Image (spheres, rainbow, N blue to C red):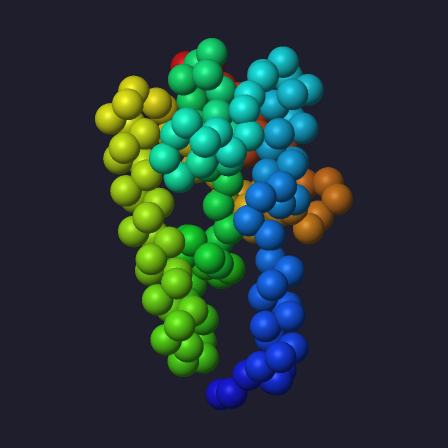
Length: 144
């Protein structure tokens, strides 16, 4: 199946996908701040500039997009159905880069917590019970 957009429209749409300060990241950051956690955002001192760094607890929180980071067994993260070598390669490259970053962060003594945006945070819902449970679990895992 071919793309329903022209290449110009697709390029415009893709150019508006943000890498920083995404809605899921802001949801997590607001929760952390409201619960007394102080953090750094996209800390350049660490390889890969992790989304959220809590130095006091030596914790890195990586908020990942299910689609672009290839979340397994997730309806948002499974590979796209159309043949797109470029996008599939980009997703595979992101998986490799994520794994390499986690190994390096852990070697430096950091605890790494991964939060998936669409399936765990349900960022498009105004109120979500699942999101509340995930964030409470996040709070407990930071302190432990």
